[in-house]
Image (tube, rainbow, N blue to C red; front, side, top):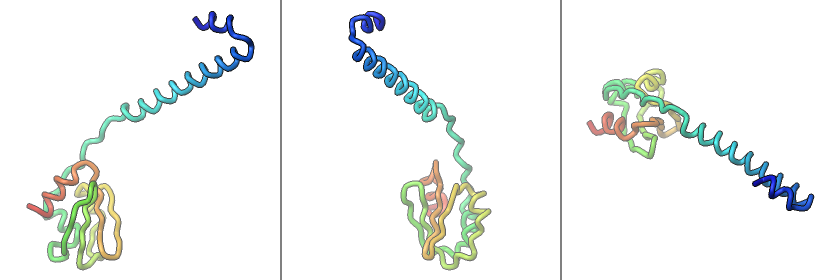
Length: 123
């Protein structure tokens, strides 16, 4: 079919047709690579959820806690004294990252934020 298309087209149209076919082939290859990257990855197992006491120990104790809220994959915690935070224990408790600001600590929990929040603050 391609041979018949090329035989009937004038030289300028042949070049344009070849360029269109090449661009289409490259786009198809790029799309395939993107789809393999997106769907080919194995999902990591969710990090284990520590006990309520382990979380509070990492946050400097229950007496250091003021209040908290949940926003998407983040848990916002307000504490009395941020120097009491044990960063290593926070990571061991299943928190994938955290951001310290002057008036709050943001805990990033990727897979099971709601479950972690409920276990810590609503148990």
